[in-house]
Image (cartoon, rainbow, N blue to C red):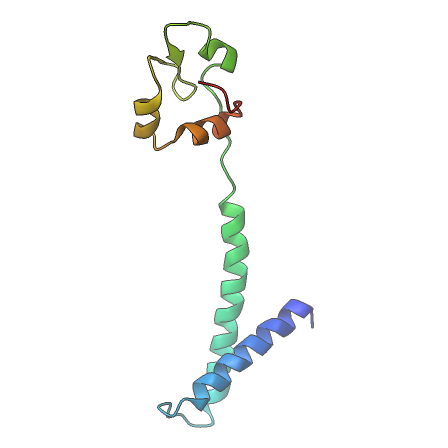
Amino acid sequence: MTDETTNTVELATELTMAWLSNPNTRTSAEDVPAFLKSIYDAVVGLSTASVEAIIEEAAPEFTAAVTARKSLANPDVIISMINGKPYQTLTRHLSTNGLTPAEYRARYGLKANNP
C-alpha cells in the first residue's frame, strides 16, 4: 500500500468509527462493511477530484490586442490591450471587464508605473 492509500483507509476508518459511535445510529453488523466501502470510495473520490480541479483551474493565457509600446504611442489616448480600442482613461473600461488596474497590469505583464 502506498502512503496515500494508507491515509485514505485510515480516514475512511475514522469516519466509520465516528458514525458508529453516534448513539442515534441504528445499524446491524452486516451494514458496516458496505458503509466502510462507500466512505472509502467517497474519500478517494474527493482526493482525486481536488487534483483534477487544480489542473482545470490553471490560469488562461491572455494575448494582448496591441503591444505595450503601441498602447502608449499616442499621448491623447491609451489603447486597450484587451480589445485594441482607444480610451481617454481605462478605468471604466477595466471595470466593465471585471478588472482592477493592478489585475490588468498583471494580466499583460506591464510595469507598476504603466498608466
